[in-house]
Image (cartoon, rainbow over all chains, first blue to last red):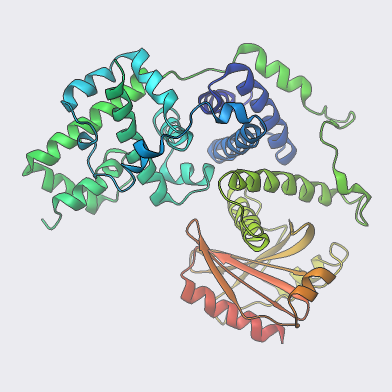
Length: 167
Length: 270
C-alpha cells in the first residue's frame, strides 16, 4: 500500500466532492511527491503529501470553474458571522439541542459538511477525520495556527447553522 | 482563577482539541466548574465534534487507484515519466542532476502560488516571499536542512564551488550568537541559489543569496536597498539587495533578533 494514500484520497474527495476528480488529483499529487522523495514515509511526509494534494486540488478547481461555482458563498449568510459570537450554541436561532441532535443523522451531517465553504471543510476534514494537529493543518493549508483555530470554530458554527437550515 | 467567560469561550475549541498548554487548560477547567453557561457550550461543542468524527464519511481510496499510480510512476532505471517535461533543461546547467531537484521544487512552488492566486493576485515580491517561506518550511520538514553540514566556513564556502555561478559570502557568526549550521543549494526566483543555515538558540534561520539578473538590478535602481521586512504564517522575513546580490533572511525568530543577524550580515558583506 502506498503510504497515506487513503488520507490523500479522503482529502481530495472531500474538497472536490467527486470520486473521479479525486482519483485524478491524487495520482497527479503522488507523482509530484515521488519526484521529491525516494519514498513516502513517516508522519511529516503525510502532511507534505496532503499539502501537495491540497495545492493540486486548488489548481484543478481553478481550471474547472464550474465546480468552483457549485458552492457560491452566500455572502450575507457568512458575513453575518464574520466577527460572530464566540459561542457555538449562539449560531442558531432555534433550540440548539434539537439542531445538535441532527448531527447524529449520518445523512444530514455529511450533507451539511459537503455544503460548507471549502476553506472550512478542509480544516474540519483534516482535524476530525485525519486527526491532524493545528500545526500540521497550518502547514498543509498555509495559514497561521491562529487561523486554523478560528476557522475550525467558525466552521463548526456554520455547520450547525447549515444543519438548522436542513429539514 | 483569573480566566473569565470571554477568554474561556475563545480558548474552548483549542481546549477540546487538546492544543492548549497545561496551565491554560487547568484555568479553563477551573472556570468551567463554576460556570454553567460555559459548561453548556462545552457540552454542545463536544457533541458536535463527536458527531462529526462518528458520522462523517472517511473515504478510502478505491482499490485500483494504487496500481494505477504505481504504473504511472517512473520505473527505477527505465525512462523517466515524461508527462511533465522540465522546460529549462536547455539551461547552462542542464545536465546537473541537482537542477532537477530545483525544477521540481519550482513546479511545486508554482502550485503553491496558484493556490494563493486563487484568492488574491500578489505582487512579484510577494510571490518571491511565498517561495522563500515554502523553501524555509520545506527545509525544516524534509530533513534536508543542509547539503553540507559544518560550522566551518572553510568547509561550507568551497562546497559551493562549481555548483553555483557565484561565490556566496559565508561566515561563522558563533561569537555573535548565530553559529553556522551548514549550507545547501536551493532554487528561488527561477535560479539556483545559496542557502546558508544559522542557528540562534533553538531557532533555525535560512539565509538565501543570489546575484540578481539584469532586470532586477535595474529595477532596484542602485546597488543597495534598505531592508524590507515582512511577516507571514508566523515567520519573519527580511530582504535587501547589495552589490547586485539579493538577500533573504527567514526564521521564526523574533524580528528584533532577526534584525540583529541582518545587521551583522550586512556589515560582513561590505
